[in-house]
Amino acid sequence: MAIRTAIGDSLVTYVQRTPKLSAQAKMQGVDMAVRYSPADPMTRWMRAGVYFNAANEELMEDKMQTSIDELRGAAKMSPEDYRVWLALGRVLDRSGSLNEARSALDKAMRLAPNHFDTRWAMGNYLLRAGDRDGSFAQMRLALANRPSALPLVFDYAWNVYQGDGKAIAASLNPPVELKAQLAAMLIAHGKVDDGLAVWREISSPTQKDIQRVTESLVNTGRFSAAYQLWSAANVPDRPSPDPGSLLANGGFEQKFAFNSNLPFHSWRVTPVGGLRITLDRKDAREGAQSMRVGFEVSGNVAFTIASQTVPAQPKKKYCLSLWAKTDELESLSTPFVEVFDSADINRARAATPTLSIRSTKWSEYEVAVDTAPATEALTVRLQRNPCPDPICPIKGRLWIDELRLYECAGPKKPEKTDPLVSAP
Image 1: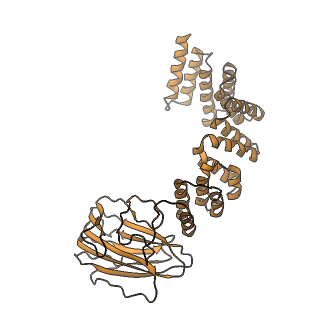
Image 2: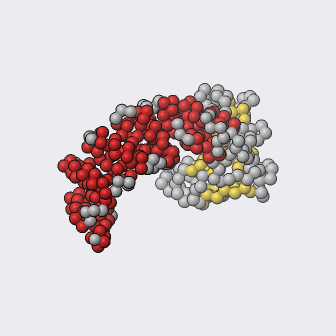
Image 3: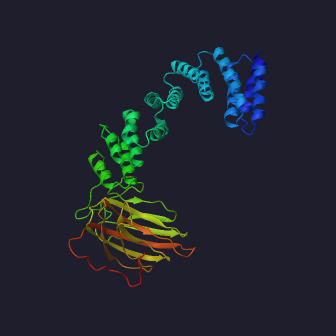
């Protein structure tokens, strides 16, 4: 008997691990397995699965009854195995035997009340049966057992409640450790007010919670709400603007993390092959150090060297000033500094000319930008655009110092430009 059972197991394993087999070959394999091991409930269960897939995927509807019969037999052989009852409930539901399906799914839940699959299957069954409230009651229990399934459950709720954020939040009502994720998902789907309402239910958010929801607001262009949330939260070592400027660390006097994920008042540096960024203590326009950028980039690529986003007011004129110098900078497309509306660059933008390809002394650059009625934040970035030519390397060195962004007190000063540079 043990030998026959082992042969049956081997046949089932072969079928499972050989996905290229045709549906007919798979059925022949499990048929033979059952002949060798007819009293093994797992072999009967596997045969049922193969026949169900043939009925469901290969449109062989005549195989559905075989699947049901096999699962009923397996349930009699192993009545305490929730997996068999769960499979039977799903197959009966698919075949239209709804009352029997409900009984089998109830049995599976009684045997495994804390298992995700049993609650999820019952939730789906109730949803198809028209019991929306009962369905999401089961899905909430499923979610408690598998928090990582929130995106899946959210998609169901979004479709069922047709994007009604309040109804979705009420139907899911996840445990507190998932509320920030739910808030972020609602915000990402355009339900900002509903997402923020969920956020306010969290009394002690973690740093990960703060980061997640702030990023969702930033990604949807809601910078004012993002800054309010971020400012109100207890973020350790939160940077503050320099005196007389909206920017933080505009003179690069403090070290900054190249992998910073702070949304505001923090320099973000994008890793680029052939680009080296350091803080230079030997050559600063003012203070102890400046930012030095070394280029050995061979490709014709656009890249952001560093950027920082700050809150700003609508319908205001802001001035950006900075000092820069170059050393043997060579390229058909050299970097420039720009300031623009963080949500929509087309609403407001100003940029310095591209920096000179020759070696230069420290030179000041100034530009002004008028914010739009909808502007909530401005981004300052050191940027390099691609060239029209397919081959466009860049090499050399560049220093930046004394970046300031402030509300202009009067007319914009004349820009200090180099006659050999061109605007980007």
